[in-house]
Length: 229
Image 1 (tube, rainbow, N blue to C red):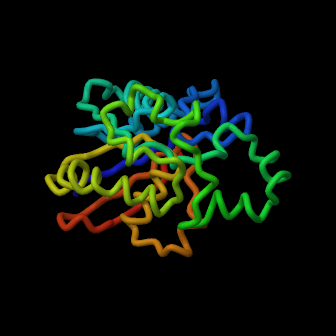
Image 2 (cartoon, rainbow, N blue to C red):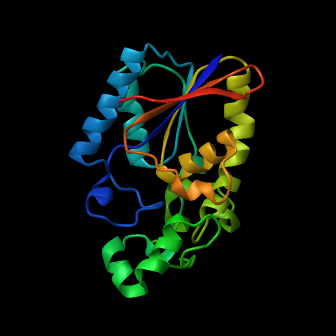
């Protein structure tokens, strides 16, 4: 059986300050570094060995992957970074404090923006100084596909081509894979992998720094799901 391990990045500086982050490239907090290192220790204790690693192009996920691999003695394995595993883009909410946004827009509205499957946040215009269109890491992308805001449905739609082209073939070949990414890109993957409904995905939480292990059979059907730690 092939194994897939998903790790939401360790606590970030903006997780700590309760800000909407999305595609903004913030670093891990000190606690987030410890969480990522501990993830590697848990993986080593579980005896899980990887063939391939995948992460986003955002620092907090990349560092989480590297710490997890370092502390499981696997820093040498092949690694691919892709924007398709980025966090959900929170549009014009990015950078705002979540509590202040709730005061401004109302708790119910902010909850809908954060947790609903198919409701978009307020969009960020392409000419805004905070737009990803101004970021060199996305210079090779068609400007028309750089988002101004995403919901979980749109996040799943941009994650799936990478799953189908890069990740699933390796699992089908019996290879073990680790993905260090973000709460919503991993929730989107989990929704697909587990066949979670649009309604029930609202209740799925991903803890920072906790490895989630899936075992698959030769047909890529989930045989077990285990959380480490």
